[in-house]
Every structure is written in structure tokens, then in C-alpha cells.
Image (cartoon, rainbow, N blue to C red):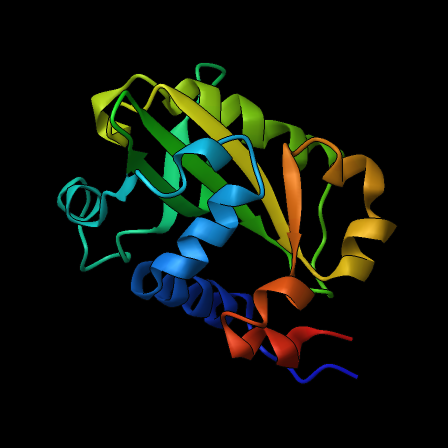
Length: 170
């Protein structure tokens, strides 16, 4: 049985590994639609930090937006990159084993990412990828909702780069 590790602790561990390790960032990018940009793109840490109040949240954590229909939602982990040609973003939803993921929540990730694109408030990125970060069993048990994301990354795979994830695996 997995030890109790909070979602916030896992978010922090992922973000720290992502910030500190070029190899981890490249590994994440190589698994998706921006694979061809993995070795040439810069993570815009300073720009993200400047775009928000870092006393409230870390540069990568809980980016909120209000959609045109009046609904508000957030992205757990938000990373913007600058390639030689354009900016792109990763919108990552972290779901621990005990978490719940409704179909509507999953579908909103793409809608939110599209709404936030091409806007200076969110660093004016022009393309994006949505990612579900969760244990393999969670992804399998929530296949319909997981399918709303561009792809999924398992805790089992991330544990090689951020060891805290080992404690959150069944």
C-alpha cells in the first residue's frame, strides 16, 4: 500500500525535478508532441515568476483563469517554454491514487489551455499539450477521462526522476 503523500508534495517534487534537471525536462518533452524541441527549448522560469505573485504561489503552481462562460479553473503544473520559433506550454493535471477526475474536469484542461494561449497574462504561448500525471492504475481505471488529455505520464515512470513518487504508487 502506498504511503500518504499529498498532491501538493508531489506537485512540488515534480516541479523541483523539472526545474533542476534538464534531463528530466527533455524526457518529459520527448514523450509528447514537442519531442523535436526537447533539446532546444528554454523553460521560462523567470518570466513565469514575474507574471504572478510568488508570495501566493510558486511560479509553476495553480495557474487560474476565468473562462468566457464565467467558470474558473486551474492548472496544477504550468510550464511555458521558448523554442527558436515559438512558445509552447505544458498543462499538467496531477491525480494521486485517491483523487477523483470527472470527465468534465478532464475536458476542461484542453479548453482552458486553448483559452490561455496567445495571451500575455499566460506568457503568450501559441501551442500547448495537456498531460495527466497519475499512477498507472488510476489512468487505467479512469480511461475515459484520461483520454481527454493529450497524453498521460505515470508516477511509476516519474519516480526515476523524482523519488517521492515511489511513495505514492500502490
